[in-house]
Image (cartoon, rainbow, N blue to C red; front, side):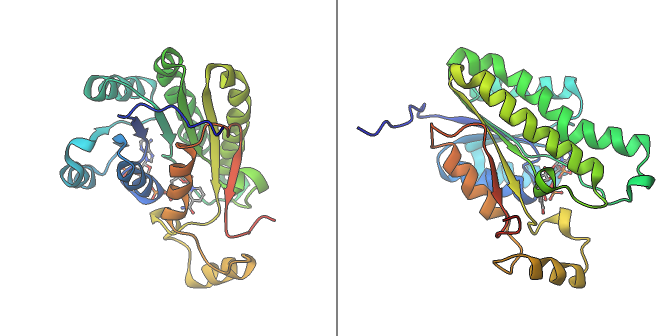
Amino acid sequence: MEEKKEVNTDRVAIVTGGTRGIGRAIVYELVSKGIKVVINYRKSDNIANQMQEEFGDMVRVYRADISKRDEVKGLIAYTLQEFGNIDILVNNAGISQTKLFTDISDTDWDTMIQTNLTANFYTIQEVLPTMLHNKNGDIINISSIWGVTGGSCEVHYSAAKAGLNGLTKALAKELGPSNIRVNAIAPGIIETDMTNDYSEEELANIRSQIPLEKIGNAKNIAKCVGWIVDDNYTTGQIIEINGGWNI
Ligand code: NAP
């Protein structure tokens, strides 16, 4: 007989970087499934306040720079105080930078690794006591196609995302016996503020390399998150959503 995933009726998620782009679409997806969400962000107070108003009691918003351990501790404590539990962690917040490898400064390198890799080490370590206590949890890391294939002029970004993929697989093995699933989604190119800098010519060139001949949208990624949180037999996977860009 098919085994259904045992879930609390009142599931609680944290989405880092939930105010814009992919994270924002993930918040909409989770709330539409009746999941309460703490929306983390770093700067965009106005958007966060609008989302609080729009979703009312289904969400809380919390400003924290996730590249800082103390601020992550604050985010987790606030979630437990407001919603009493944590079932799902979506590590979505991230930054990008396009530079020749020879131009990457020590500060560029450190900021990239700290925000796109080490921050996820912090968030996961801080939610784990709750998930281990529950013997249940979903950790979803938003990685990138560049973490799989490598991206020219984004070596520090690619290295951080490849590190996140390694973290995902290793931790899935370690946490499997505790019934905590760890997966990553590696998007191709998705229309968000992060990709605003591409010129029309660059976008046309990218489209021509993608079998489905189009740029993705944030909902394509959010729908996958919605599926993962309802499944109980997928772990350690790097799920590539890219229109077939990397076949
Ligand atoms: P985005 O539109 O630039 O949004 C980034 C979000 O992350 C914002 O909500 C931002 O908060 C938050 N953020 C950034 N640094 C933070 C920090 N230190 N602490 C807390 N929040 C922080 O980016 P996106 O395109 O949606 O990307 C989301 C994720 O998908 C990233 O991990 C990115 O690497 C990955 N990805 C994106 C693409 C793509 O084509 N767009 C492709 C592959 C992978 P504020 O609003 O407050 O600044």
